[in-house]
Image 1 (cartoon, one colour):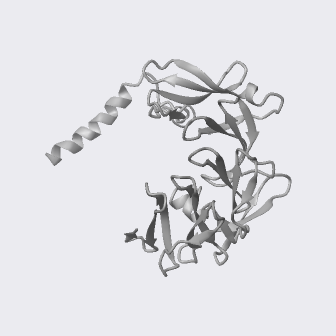
Image 2 (tube, one colour; image 1 turned 90 degrees about the vertical axis):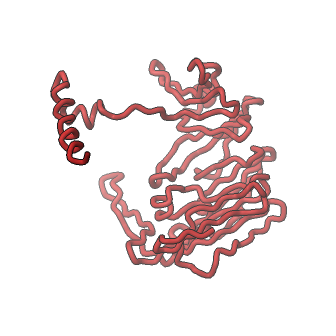
Image 3 (cartoon, one colour; image 1 turned 45 degrees about the horizontal axis):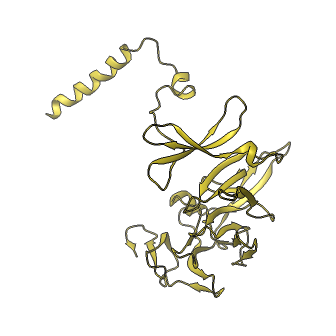
Length: 304
């Protein structure tokens, strides 16, 4: 059987090339992307399981919409957001959006600046679908990783390596960590290693009842720095960040949770080993139980 498979595989390629009506060019492959497999992107299922939303741009006037579609027919059932109506006179453009759990509020991202592969600086707005009102998440600077509380009464985000909570009813903004420093301490976000290798950037998580926030703290003080030139003008600027090469020190990672009622922060016991990875933490269905996954640096054993 093995002797027959190889000649057949080689015969298929000439047959496909001969069947083409015109020669295949590099432009077809890399510019026009003529042979890229089709897919569905930007679709967000809605709670009823019968509809989905998608962000689209009107090609005639470049207005941005979030539309509600019917799965069965594919037809548009509602306009959830319209950029020109939402930001009338402000000159802002909607870059992305996400719903609260009950879909009553929409988090709208504008003026997005990419930091690394999965991290962004954003000016966020909250749109209340019932009252048709729009409010900025914060007036004190761009945010990272904004995320609704389960009941959508609050929203948490990271700025300057610290975690903040915005009460959407009172408008009060509260900082719940205070030791964040660039290239030293990160609260609620990941360092470069975790963002790249474990594929997540937001590193804080609401408990199911919304009464606590579990979060990562990265101490990257001893991690070696690397510098790269950034060409924004006539002369390059130097950008420095923590980047551990093979065998160098990693960040010391700890897990904590903040209790909104008491204002207290508790450190989670993750064992005595400091040179380890914590690739994931997850709240269980019990709002008082947090699951922590640990992995040694050799990556041959996972513990939880």
